[in-house]
Image (cartoon, rainbow, N blue to C red; front, side, top):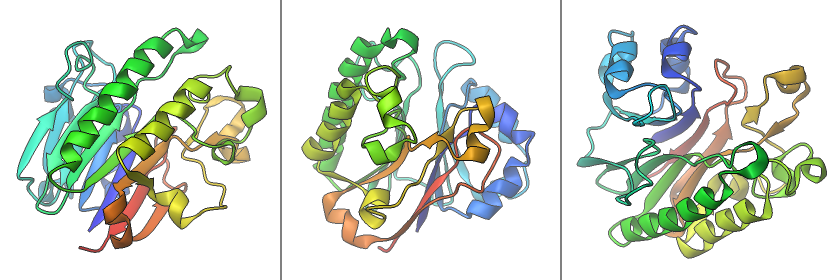
Length: 258
């Protein structure tokens, strides 16, 4: 199976940028999408009738606040069940998690909260990280987990172009967020599959729209394909598809042998 994750930075915007052709290029069996910035009916409307989409089952979870956050899953294989949210009051209002259960594994796509300018949402982020770990741990009790998405953190200095300038100043690279990611990997027994396969390689999945950052490759690795430790031997390859345009993020893809 080929699995992909992509923060599209607005589903209605990316549909105008040949999204159907980009999906054909990815050729994924299951795709986790973040930041749809649309309500569920708007997601369906945006994707309705696109060439190639007829082979996918489509699911979405939207925020109460319109035009904000939101996740979706496109799958060629019909899941056993699909669940939105993590089941915690106060944390499920922004459509940040969508979970599809398949025969061999749980597939989770997540759009982790950004700590925001001035780090004003960092306390909310800490609360989220703790609850999300517990959610993944619970899923892992029944079968392995593939956790995909924009986790809004660069975990190690190698994961962003300018670590010293951003450390403890910029959302996504504070020690609180780094520690949250470490706990997710350790306590939920997950592997960062791309880093496992590319231990010393520099690769980014997000670039600011400012200052020609993408052309200069001044980026961050914020998008992950995390897998349960016991599933890691089944991972054949993991690739950051940096040549796929259309968003300030690029897709990340994983091939899984089951």
